[in-house]
Amino acid sequence: MSFVFYLVSALTLAGGLAAILLKNTVHCALALTVAFAGLALLFLGLDAQFVGFAQILVYIGAVAILVVFAILLTRGSETPKDGVYSKHWHTGLVIAAAVFAVLGWAVLQSIRVLPYQTPAPQVTVMQIGNALMTRYVLPLEIIALLLTAAMIGAVIVAMHDKNGKNGKEAAK
Amino acid sequence: MNPLAAYLMVAAMLFAVGLAGALTRRNAILVLIGIELMLNAANLNLIAFWRYGPHPEALTGFMFAIFSIAVAAAEAAVGLGLVIQVHRHAHSTDLDAMNRMKG
Image 1 (cartoon, each protein chain N blue to C red):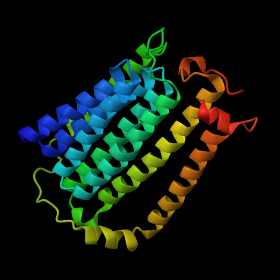
Image 2: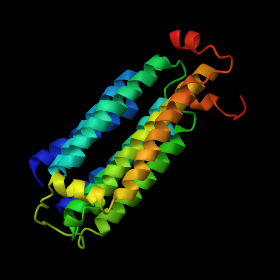
Image 3: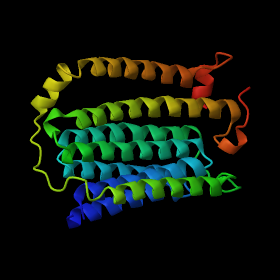
């Protein structure tokens, strides 16, 4: 494996670790952006240019901004007095470690049968478009419906107010 | 090291980090961040298997990853909308304090 792969992997994991360890929630969102950028670079390294750029557009461009908006709207950047970790954080850590142990064990066990170096696939955007319009047209339509429904649902959920004082609440 | 195994190990570590974040943090937004990290680790697995699989020209793992990104974006929008609404209702995003469904 090349030096670049190890560098980008270390960057991604460091970003992910910082995103869940930092105390200030805004810093967590910024570290999450670093992790997303590292993942986009990993996708580019895997010859999946389209997914890499989609990752940058969707995650860095939309999801990270959405997370920052949510943090600022909920005043989540203030560090709570009784710590940032939940009461049962030991259990969560043990579960995460156990899941990693199982996944790592599975990967290491199968290392002999995994394919080694294969020629890089030549995928053009035209092929992707053709596949989306022919074989994957039904999933594409369902995703379009899902995104529309999710967007309308998110707006309705976030705007709804019992006493109809949306304007006052939004201005607060 | 086998390149596919290296990518799978990175994805496993990222998944574990995301799971640890989702299970240990108190703030609901940080839990959503952990879930996003887990989804991204799954995407990395899909793309790695597509790249080193026997038939990359079939584009199956590739398409799966694209649809997974779209679903994750929808999930983030709805989840953060819910967090904002819960904060408006309970004036807190502390998950330890949210132990009942009834308003």
